Amino acid sequence: MSGSTITPWVVGNWKMNPIKADALQLVENFKHLLQTNPIDENKCHLGIAPISIALPMVQANFSSANRAIYTVAQDVSKVAGTGAYTGELSAELLVDSQIHYVLIGHSERREFFADDAAALKKKIGNALNAGMTVIYCVGESLEQREACQAETVVLQQICDIASVVESEQWEKIVIAYEPIWAIGTGKTASPEDAQAMHAKIREGLTQITAKGANIAILYGGSVKPENAVELAACPDINGALVGGASLNAESFYQIAQAFANTK
Ligand code: 13P
Image (cartoon, rainbow, N blue to C red; front, side, top):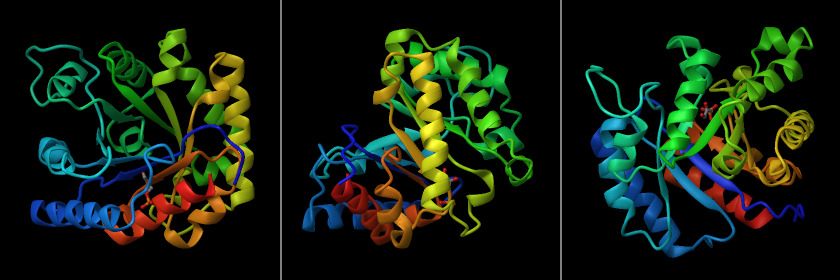
């Protein structure tokens, strides 16, 4: 037990995967595992972020699970409300479809889809104003880590959004630290390195908000059943954002169990 009072979160980011039939099977398999061996809601929040077209389908299928499993959007528009913005999906429209959770600032969106600090501020502001809970992703590249800039980069990414988060809205923020060099590479940050960065993030958050000590900070980057227990044992690692391993129900379940049992 780590002694933390923060309920851990284990969230699967399916990215641009899988096809519909496989998504449905994955949901069924995961529900079955939870049915057979339940994970208490008070011990771990669970969420899945599917492709946007699958959000209502996944949500509907999870409604028969024996516990809450959040359906999480992978992104949101920097434009609020409704209007002539072809291809966009606003926070209000997500909430209108009962989607109350969203990933913002994933490194793949920062790198390939021009999500810079200005865009991310708009997205976070819109999501929070629509009442959504935001999982805000931060993380440094390998070059930045090797140049000893990792902490500065990550703390700057946190500071980038501070001006748009009202004091009471920090309750709706979860941070996900995902070092870019660990994503999809099979290379996980060591528990010591991950804990060290999480402690820095925690310190930064407590300087920004009185709620800093209670904000969940998730680790992401090649989380698997084999490393989940060690990561979960770190005091400032309050859960996991899981990519590849979330596409296998058994692996994802084992990661969730590791956090539920260790915290
Ligand atoms: P992997 O778990 O596949 O490394 O992906 C991590 C990630 O990017 C989750 O958002």
